[in-house]
Image 1 (cartoon, rainbow, N blue to C red):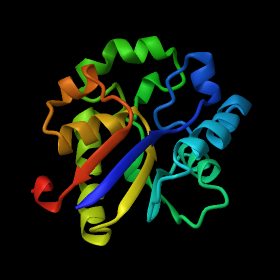
Image 2: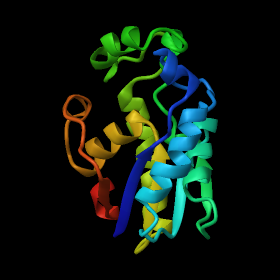
Image 3: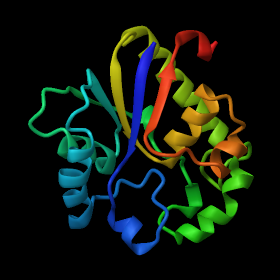
Image 4: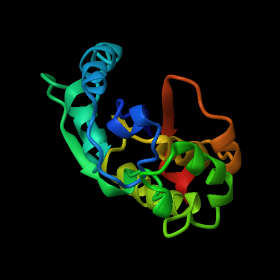
Amino acid sequence: MIDLWLEFHAQTHHNAAGLASGHYDVALTDMGRAHATTVLRARYAGQSFDAAYASDTQRAYDTACLMFAGRDIPIFRDARLRECDYGALEGRARADMEAMRLDAIDAPFPLGESYMQVAARMRSFLTQLAIERDGQTIMLVGHAATMYCLDHLLRSRSMRDAILMQSERPYRYRLEANLLR
């Protein structure tokens, strides 16, 4: 069993402008960097982690590095933890993407991917993690789609319910290998 924690990346320039990022590699704002350095670092200061895994996006990796700076916690990047690919909606108003979110559960966003496709790559990541990190405490730094997939795969929620009924903090899960079969 893995004690699995999730934290979202800090504020980016797209977040501040109300834009949908998806796979766009957007940097953290100064406010985002400060939030990761102070609030997130303090939030997990007393918690021991064996490792952290971040989406391979700059925003997630930088958040993980800032929140664990000065601690002996290895941080790994993994593309399977990326946000959903919003395709033609990336870089556009976030409200446009959100209006299509429930339609993209099974059918991909135009020129992008569906949330069930994201769940398939998350399942691959979690299956590997369950083999390699059994008995450990792991932090994931990711995106909204990361949470939706964790709720779907590890809490047996429908993807629709995972999107509509977002989990409450702390975002903490139990990963057991037999849950993924």
